[in-house]
Length: 91
Image (cartoon, rainbow, N blue to C red; front, side, top):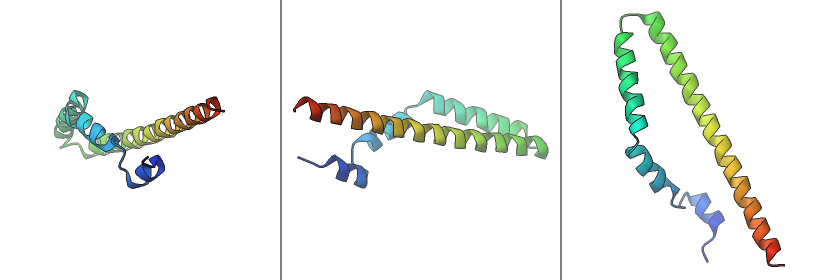
């Protein structure tokens, strides 16, 4: 039996391909890029507004990264609890 812990350590647990495929086919990401480019072009001549927009994007990126981390940790905890329940069911 393969070790899940070793798979996680190596990053070889199938999610990378699934997430990459999702990102590649994401209509939402296409929209984000489109609107980002349009807003950047509109704000090209106004450096103050462009800086505010860049700060907004950075803050949103950080928020999304933090949120993703929290979901990952919560999912890991749920998986661990499931494993404990399975182990206890065998007792």
